[in-house]
Length: 111
Image (spheres, rainbow, N blue to C red):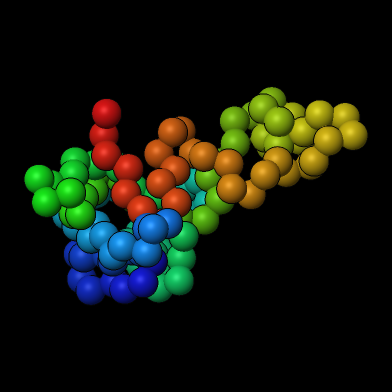
């Protein structure tokens, strides 16, 4: 995330384009897979967002914004209870998608 100004977040996508994420009172936030406040989002953070993309194609009205590492389901590879397959990585890849809404530094529209 490159900037935070009130209810507006600026991110730079993988192609180098600046995108805008607008939040509102109904937007939910997560940090490391648990509920958080908007203040958990800081410049330099990697964020994932979902919502509705405006017709301009560069602005997302966010329903949900997440940062940090997503929670893994118990029993899944790298999950809290499963802790990965025998001989495999204990925590799984750090860049694994979270529920299909991992947009990298960009924007993921609702399907």
